Image (cartoon, rainbow, N blue to C red; front, side):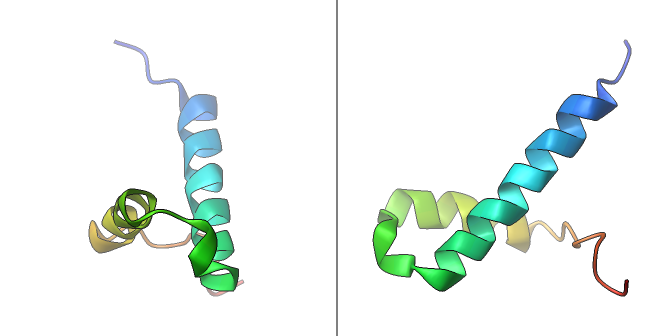
Length: 52
């Protein structure tokens, strides 16, 4: 099975974008949306941009 790296990178970028939006405007998100965004962070997916 081939891995679609482009799709994975796009999904990761979107997740970081949503997390940043949630930090800026948490009242704009439902509790369920916040849980989904927090779950991604909880799973230990480090931001590859850190340390640049």
